[in-house]
Amino acid sequence: MAQPPAPLKDMKLLDVKLGQLPTWLAMRDFTPGGIVGALRRGYDRYFNKYINVKKGGLSGISMVLAGYVVVSYIWSYSHLKHDRHRKYH
Image 1 (tube, helix red, strand yellow):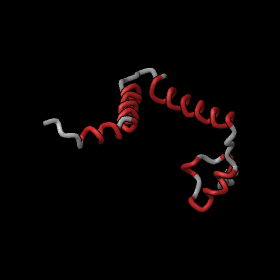
Image 2 (image 1 turned 45 degrees about the vertical axis):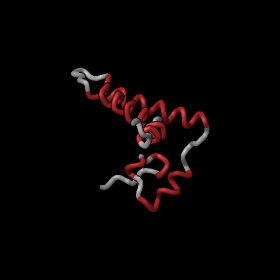
Image 3 (image 1 turned 90 degrees about the vertical axis):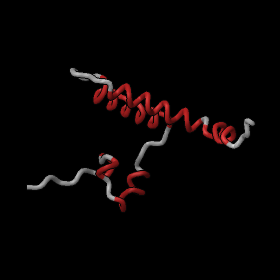
Image 4 (image 1 turned 180 degrees about the horizontal axis):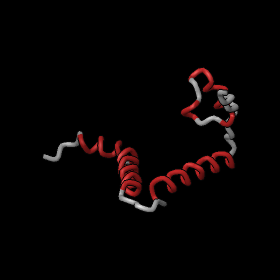
């Protein structure tokens, strides 16, 4: 016999169909505690998948560094864009 489908509240975002997305979003917990809990679960998932492994590599740390580079570039883009159009001669 096939497994009965999981309740919509317990489904992960990748398992939700496009038509069910508004209902799924309405069931999420958007309180400060719910947001902190979601961030904590995401951090724990990342840590256990890439950092806390028996045969670790540089992949987990390099992803964090690449993310830092991208975010710092986005934060300073307006300043860099302004400097790009300035004439130095």
